[in-house]
Image 1 (cartoon, rainbow, N blue to C red):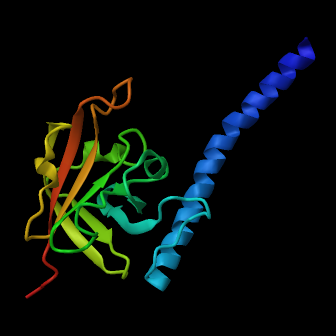
Image 2 (image 1 turned 90 degrees about the vertical axis):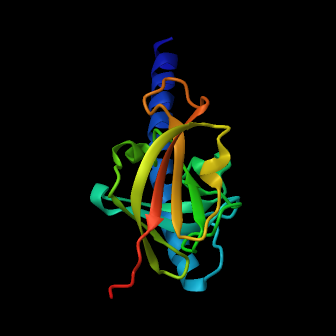
Length: 186
């Protein structure tokens, strides 16, 4: 009986250690795939069975955050990082590029963003595109106005709300709107 309890406890500890180790390994593989994507200018899967690939890098310099953005917003992609809504503009173009992420992992920092903060989006070609947060708001999940395209460079970040909810999901979304900052210094 004691042996079974010890074995069960050991297996439980091993499983608990495996999950964080797997998460760290995934981030290393994502970073490697992002660098390969920039080199080849073609999608590179982080592991052979992945159904997503890096499309950009999102950086919040003030908050010391940097993360690989993946293609798509399905559950498998969002488990490893924020995802680019493929029906929105590609990262770094003059239109609305929409990125979604989980409120309790990669996008937990959205709650501390405020108007005036700078975000950077590195496109596949390596060019950094700067955006300034213009506003944050909470909308219902049926409010698709946050997905609307426009002529100006825009970045829209979306996560579930409230941040401290005990049950994931729910009908509310926290939205960060940011406008492109002109790189013209004249």
